Image (cartoon, rainbow, N blue to C red; front, side, top):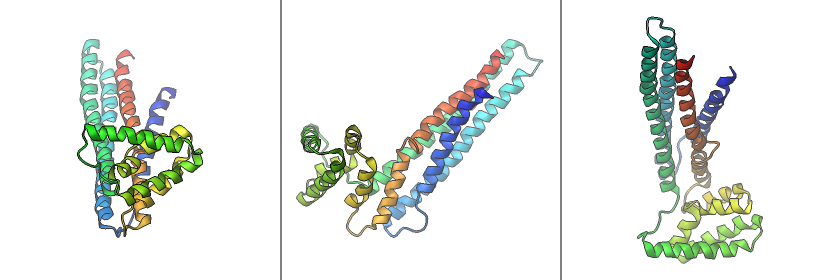
Length: 254
């Protein structure tokens, strides 16, 4: 039915997100022990998230089916049907929303684990003095990059990170590679994000790390944080659950 199209589209977004997450996790045994440990966590979190997606889907299906049965139960008064339908939608909807929230937590935990594995930590202490230093750093970096063409920015940013490495400037290194600022700046300039994403694994890979494995880890992180990956899937899942539960509730008016 036409009214089902939005829910089907939302479900497709969820499914595509899960497929992207699954395909982004490297197969086989990784050589880098840090990456290998994170790979196992990612695989475990993915399997758990898939199970929760099945739980959410089963819950909204149950809400819809039970609401349908209540609607056709001629032994119930209109008031009893309404009360029973609301109870079913609340109960099964709660189960679905709990599953969706746990999926969100697993995605966030997976992304955080990847960042902790690959990216430099924020220097401590993260106090008012550091915030002031960061404000100056943002201004100084933007002033340098603003003079360049959009295509030149990724190369200059990479040079800045290497300069920070050579000078032992942990704050600049963390700012450029571990915060969202670089991507947001590139987007504001209309630069191609792929140019920076392709450079990033090489920039942050520790000495002795396998570059291809580092790139593989970055692909997983990008999938988790992408609107076309799990970021979009988690948002679509919330809207899908609401749409399905609204559909079950609408049987009251039928």
